[in-house]
Image 1: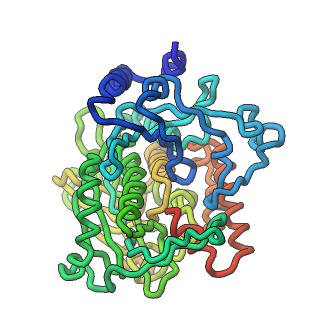
Image 2: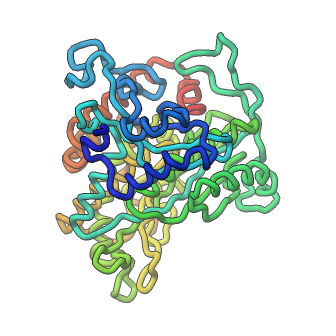
Image 3: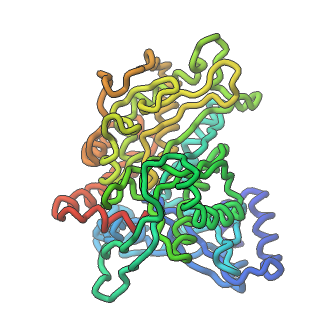
Length: 478
């Protein structure tokens, strides 16, 4: 029996998809397949497998070193992997032992920008069949399973702001190699501040069309492409997908956008606020609702005239507010992301909600009779690991449902509010996450301790660095 069979890792649908993929690889023109898993930062890592090895790799998994889970955002190893338990207190992680990444055959795509190249999304497992506890996709699935036990399915749509620049110098001289190396030198594609003007959009259109064509070929549910407020800033919106679908879409979207742009002489960055003159901050607005398993209807739609949300929606909203501080380290996981929280900037400052209010952290959209009724969380940054962002939202909302919390009235003056301020730094956010018992129980205390240790290492390096630290750290990675 294969590794997948021994440990029952695939459903019947996945097994059928794997058989079809292995059988038809030649007819599909597959030469190589990238087996990729989202790491703790939401960055894709993995190996490229030849078509001849594809059947074996599907059934047996692909080996990786467990040291990948010890890396911070500079790719430096934070944990002492050659001590007993590999620095994690786990024999399976000792001395950089191997793990396996196993593909989800239903995730297969051909990459339009890389001829003959397929792609599969994977999850990590130990050789004995136990799940690696730091696999963030599995953490999101666990939250979704708990939500399903309450009779609901999660539905999420994405608004993603980012920057695209013309690449002038990739900084690939030997003296530029470092951990991290210096960021690339770039030039603007547009000046800024002409928000949604067709003239500015037309200047972005050549790169927007490159992205649109290939992202559509990947099957991503593109809705709109917009010229954002800042210089060289663009926004894509993606339609709502159920379950883990939108998190998978976000990981693929980011990786695809960076790769497509780089191949055509551009640099795409999901760093929140690049250290460039006149740069504006980018956010990631997460639109979310719950679908009732019993009838497939939106559980947030209120029946009462004038109400913003149903009782289920209000309780879920209250849970998001109650855990906004602990969840911040997961929705805004970089030091740079906290540069965005400032008054009168359309970015949130406080853990408050409002109805159709873009200054509030949680914006409620819709109402009676509107099947699109939802909660928009405006706190996130586009560099966030989507699986952790989703998981934090679900565990927070579930706490509101289980404890029957009430969010109170909406706040119509978000920048004059007396609501609790959001964390002002990553350090404050990490401390709030450590103190949040609900998120600790949902994500697992071991994972929270692990994640916070990675962020502590990031903060320690920042405290020893000079002002260009953020640019070197995030500009190329995200």
